[in-house]
Length: 433
Image (cartoon, rainbow, N blue to C red):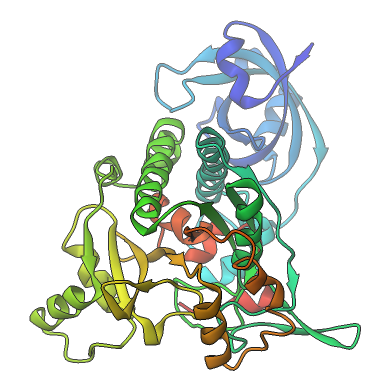
C-alpha cells in the first residue's frame, strides 16, 4: 500500500492509497459521511458510503471527533473541480491513531484573543494554514531573488553590543558583566560584510522593546536586510522595487488558492509592479495638510493615519524619500544638495499596512560618521570603533534596507492582524488590537 500526502492526490488518480491525517471537520447525510482531512500539505474530502463499507467502519466515520488522527485508505477520485485540490478520497478503510476529545476550537466563530491564547492549536485551521503557506512562499522567493541578484547570505549576531538606532527600544541583558542587547537590526554587521563580499543579505529575528498596542506591531519579528557596496540611494530604491514586485508575483503564481481562501483582492496585488511612486518627505507633508491633517508638522514622523492617507493616493507601494536629518538615525548619508536632509526612504504598502521597508544610503566618510556618533552620545572608542574602521580602509558608497517579513505577509495576504503572520507570538506579543 502506497502512503502519500494530500498534495500528491493529483499523481494517484484512480489508485488506492493510504493517508495519515487529522479530522478537520465532518458531516453526514444518512447514508454518506463526509470527512474533511488535513495533513499539513493540504485539505481534502474523504467520502464514506454506507453501502460500500462495513457497518463498523461507517459508524466509526460518523462518530469520529474533530482533530482525531487517523490512517485512511481509499481510492483517489476527481471531485469534478469542486475544490482547489480537484480530488477526493473514496474511503475503503480507516484506523484511529489517537482520539481527540473536547477540541477547544470548534467550527463556530471565536474571538481573536481566544484564538491567540490557543495559537498552538489555531495553526491547524484552513486560514492559518493559508497564511503560513504565503509566509513560506515569501521566504522561498526572498532566497531565490537574492541568489539571482548575486547576493551572499550572512548571519549577524542576535546578541549585540551596539545600538544602531539608540537603546530606548532594545532589550538589555548582562553579557558576563557587560551590557548587551537583543538585536534591533543586523545592519552594522551587514555593512562590514558588504565591504568583504559586495552584496549581502541577512534574514533573522529582531526585537523591539516597545509596548505598542496596535494591530501592526510585534515585539519579535523577522527582517530581511540587504547591504550593497558601490550602491547609491537611487540604485537601492531600484532594487527594493524589484524585490517587492518579485514577492507579489511569486505569491500570485504559487499561492493563488491560499490568497483566494483568505479573500484577497488579487487585482490589487497584480498592480504591484515597478516602478513605484517616489515622493519627498516635504511633499508628503504638503499633501497631508491639503488632505486636512492638522496634527502633522514638518519634522514630525508619520503615524498610521498619515501613512494610510499617502498610500490610498496610489495603487501600489510608494516611497517617501529625503527625510529631515534630525529625525533619522546617525548612520544615514546627508543629501549633498541639502545638508538638512538624508538620503533615505520608507516604502509604504497600499491598503493601510504601513511601512514595510526602511532604508538609506550609509554615511561613508569617516570624519562625518565619527562626528555623528559623538553627537548622539554614543561611545566611538568601544562599541562603534569597528564600525568606524569600515570607513578607514577603502570606504565606498554603500546602501541598505530592511524589510519586515510579518508586515509584508499581512499585506500580501490581506489579513487584518499582523499577529496572524507569525507562527508563535510570544506572550509579550499578545497585544490588543
